[in-house]
Image 1 (cartoon, rainbow, N blue to C red):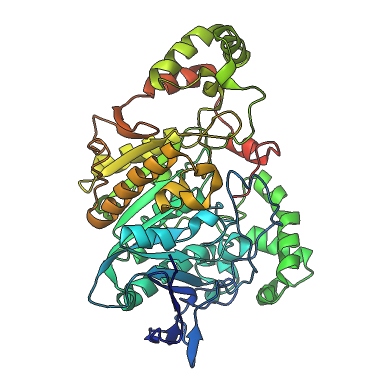
Image 2 (image 1 turned 135 degrees about the horizontal axis):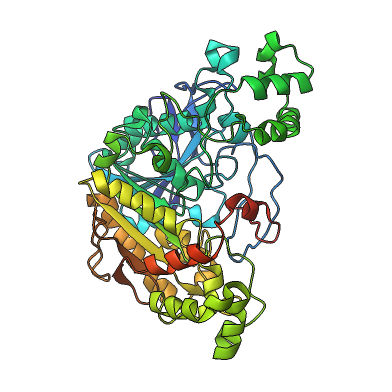
Length: 520
C-alpha cells in the first residue's frame, strides 16, 4: 500500500523555545533533533529559544564519545552511527496527532551505553515509529551529555560549575521539563509520562527516581537490564578537585585559569583525562564518569535506598537470560548427548555438576543445561533486589520479568544484552534475527503489556497470564519465552547454589574482556 508523505501542509507549532516544523509520514507526525535546552561545557542546561522556524526533519547531534565506534555483532544488535557535537541536547518525537485535546500517554526513551556512550538513535531498534503506530502513544527519545562532558565535577573551580558532576542527568531533567511544558502540542498528556531505558538507560530511570527536580515530570518507569550497586559500579562521591587539577597540569593550564578547560578541544581534553584518571582511580579517588551523590542526586537505590517519592511510581524491572554472554558456544547444544553436556558443565562445576544440571532443569525446563554456563549473574539478582526494595515501601506496584527467548543464530543462542529491546519497541521487523513466528507472538505479548503499563500502571495482556506485583513475601516473575508464564521465586535455589560454588562475578573484568566486548 502506498504511504503518504507530507511536509508543506504540516502546521508550524509554537513551542516554549520557538516555532517548530516537522513532517508527516504514513500516519505519523515526526519531529527530529528538537532542541530542549542549551548548555556551555560543564554548566547547567538553560532554556533555549530560536528565531524563525526550526526545521525538525533531521536527527540532532549526539554526544561525543570516548572511543571510536567499531561495527560489531550487527546481526545481534544492529546500530546506527551519527555526527557528534557537545551541543547535543535534543530529542525526537513520533505522534499520530497534533490535537492538544487528545492527551495520549507519553513514553520517553533513555538510551543505553552506561553513562559514557550511546545515543537516542544508536540502535536500529530505538526507532519510535512502530511504538507510536501500534501503541497509540506519543514517543520521545532523548540525547544528553555523557562521559566527561556530562559527569565531571568542576564545582571546586567556580560557582558556575555547580552540579557539573550531574550535568548529564540535569540534561535529562531539562528534557522532561520541556516535554511537560510542550507535549500537549503533540497530542500528549504531560500528566501521564513513562520513562524507560535499557542497560545504562535503565540505571538512568532509577537515577531520575532519586532526583527531586524530576518529581512530577514522569509517572512510571521500566528498567531493562540496568540495575547497579556498589559491587558493580561504585557511586561517585567526593569532588573533582584532584582529577581536574591533574588534567590542568597535563594540559599546562594554571589552576587559577581552570575556565580554559571550556575551550580545550574535546579530543585533547579526553586524552588528558584518560592519561591522569587511572592513577587517581587506583587510589580510590573521584574521577567522575557517573552521577555524583549529594543534594541533587540521592544515589543508587541499592546503595542509598529509595527516596519516598519513588514509592509512588509504578515500576517494571527485568533482565535477559544471558546478558553479557555474546560469544557463541564452540558446539551445537541441540546435538549434545547427556554425557557430553555433563562433560561441558563439569569443566566449571566439577563435583557439583549433577546437582547443578538438576537445579538448572528445574529452574529452566526445556532449556539445554550447557546454558547454565551463561546464565546471567550481573542483572537478574540485582533486578530481583531492586524490585524487592521498591515493593517494600510501594503501593504503586512493582513488576518483575525475565526474558529467556532463544534466537536462530549460533545454534539457538539464548537471549543476550539488548535482545529484548526490539520486542518492547514493537520493532522486531527491523531486526532480522527476530524474524520468527515465536518472536512475532512474543513481541505482541510484551508490547501490549508495556503499553497497558504506560496507560494505567499495570502490565496486562489478554495473551499473558495475570501479572502479579512483587510483595514483601512473594517474587512473581513473568517469564518471556515461547510460552509465557508467571513463576514465583523460581530461580532462588539456582542462584544460591551458583554463588556458593563460584567466586563473586567481576563485572569490570568482564567489561574489559575483548572476547565479550560489544558496543551497545
